[in-house]
Amino acid sequence: MRQIIIALSLASASMLSVAGGMPFGGEDSVEDAKDLWKVLVTEGLVGENAVHSKPYKGMPPHGMVLDTIQKTVSVNGHTGRVIIKRNYGGEGVDVAKVAKDPKPWLKAVTVMFKREYGYDPENQNWFWAKFKPNGSLHSNPKKMLLAGRVAKGMPKGCIACHKAAPGGDYLFNE
Ligand code: HEC
Image (cartoon, rainbow, N blue to C red):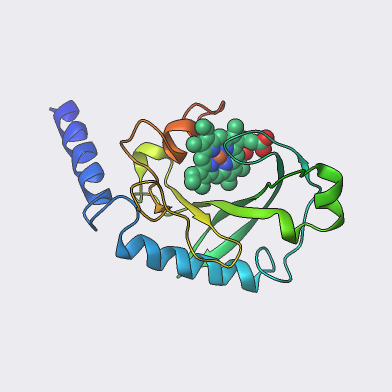
């Protein structure tokens, strides 16, 4: 009996997590991404006056040069850890050039934000977003905006790849 109850509550938790509509790219996710971006600007983590950490040599899909920063932030009353990875690229990019002047090389800002329990319990409750340097969102080839539970249930994308990270929390750099 107990097993049945657990199974039922797990099933309803996973239904809840998509009850708001699409797992990613929908209106709710885009609003969440906007709110998150605003907080990151205020915290000086993205945008014109953002702090930078030391760039290092990266690899696809993120970029040939990367830098990663993290902090704990509050968005709409929820406090969680945020990890921001800046993805640099372009003809002739290298670590020294990015260290000297990062802006012209910045292609994307990929973010993971730890949401409240229940947001996506099967995937460690991460919110994922791929921003352009100006804070608008990148989209996938199907024109779906990359914000939310990206790309839950699909064979490729943030969740599918990060699932393989060691340690079980979907983080490669720990
Ligand atoms: C094909 C695999 C793959 C996909 C797809 C992918 N990532 Fe990553 N991601 C990585 C790897 C590998 C690292 C570690 C790279 C490094 O810093 O050297 C990483 C690092 C990160 C980090 C820094 C935290 C960490 O895990 O170390 C963030 C944040 C991140 N990715 C966000 C995203 C987002 C958002 C998406 C989807 C838009 C995404 N990633 C898609 C492989 C992937």
